[in-house]
Image (cartoon, rainbow, N blue to C red; front, side):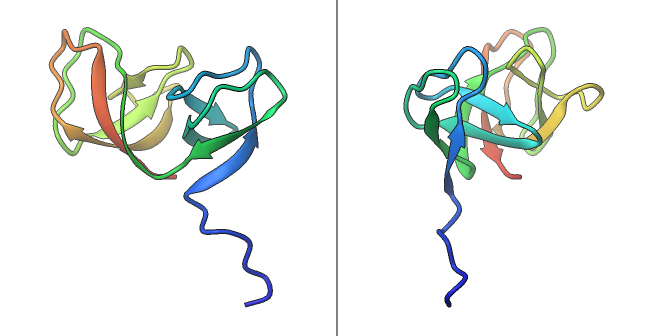
Length: 107
């Protein structure tokens, strides 16, 4: 197929303000992914937009398996839709005290 570009599970995107570190969740517009490497602001970085990742979680509320996961402006996963961006679903329950949660990202 002459218009095929790539599989699409990894994308080369421009690192946002402040740059990124390997494993960091990043939101570019409405597209969420996890940086595969570190990159300085404005540099291209390989970003995974599929898979299950352990990501930082907002403390103080529990997330159940299968719950919708949202990315906050502060760079953490929350179960609250308002003011946040949908990024996927929780794959393993996380209690209120948990600082990390496993999320299957899907855009």
